[in-house]
Length: 166
Image (cartoon, rainbow, N blue to C red; front, side, top):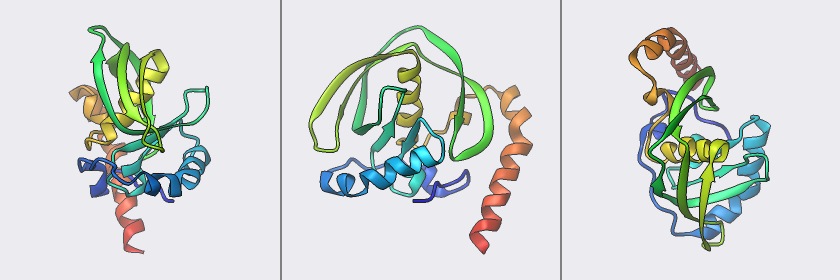
């Protein structure tokens, strides 16, 4: 699997719900290996060209497959934390995220789970969840920060275009 880079249209599409869990199980190991090989703590299906609502994450307690996720409740309070993205290599910036989220999702077998996530796990979940709606972490940045990163983002997209033309 190859991680898609900023400028790839699949990263901006709203992903479709998963109905065939066998499809997720078939690619699970390769998906997980891709995330770890890229040194990521999360990887969403659109990032590998699949416009489906699932992602994998590992907050340090082991890999978890998250399918058809929902954020059903969140804190009023937000916290600022640095984020990066495998699809936007080399770019890091502070992003405001909810301190905690109550989530519901299915695993790769279709079994439902509900959890309260706080801090780092909540941040990873929100970042990957955004990918499923075509939202990237840079979309949460203020104008000043985005302007400061504009040249870097442009260079990433130009490199992606050159790679696609090969």
